[in-house]
Amino acid sequence: MEIFLDTAEIEDIRKYKDFIDGVTTNPSIMSKRGNDNPLDVIREICDTIDGPISAEVLSENYEDMLKEGKALAAVHSNVCVKLPCTVDGLKTCKALSSEGIPTNLTLCFSPTQALLAAKCGATYISPFIGRLDDIGQDGTELIENIVDIYEVNGYETKVLAASVRGVQHVVQAAILGADAITLPVKILKQCFEHPLTTTGLEKFSADWENRKK
Ligand code: G3P
Image (cartoon, rainbow, N blue to C red; front, side, top):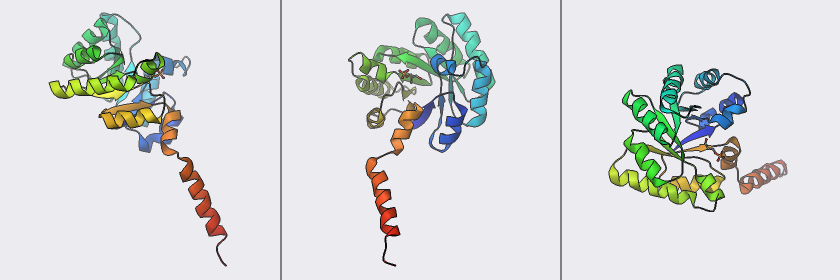
């Protein structure tokens, strides 16, 4: 399973570079970089790590999304143009895919949106599992449905679990066969941690210090 970092912070990307396959961003994440030019931020990320970098369009109609998507893709061959699961977003996905530009279809909340994204040639589909959990639905069930639909129909679109709220989501996505997951720094950190590892190390160290001399 590919692991992406859901951030636009260069320091975090540098710090966890050895453990991640790429980066995903969205307008909320980019807004944390203040007035930095989005194209410059994406270029900076591409210069920091070699792997798929999802960069989202801000416009909402086909013509503007297509223009914006091409400008983002021109920054670096690793850029994956992130588009919403709307009629215009899917139409843009189809157009960009036909030109060989990688895409990531975002804000996916239903299996039918995922089916349409695959038919339009999306490289990744991003089901937002945490936001479904937030409204009392089961986000992991959506992953399961999409994985099944893609397998039965032979679609190559990769399932990228997004809107991850905890390590349990990481485990469930991996068990269900998601191809990728994107994690906020906080959750990636939690993936390394276990209290028994910490206390176990402390005990090893103390036992060694107190050995018979
Ligand atoms: O990058 C998309 C997604 O991961 C956003 O998650 O936490 O805003 O629901 P969240």
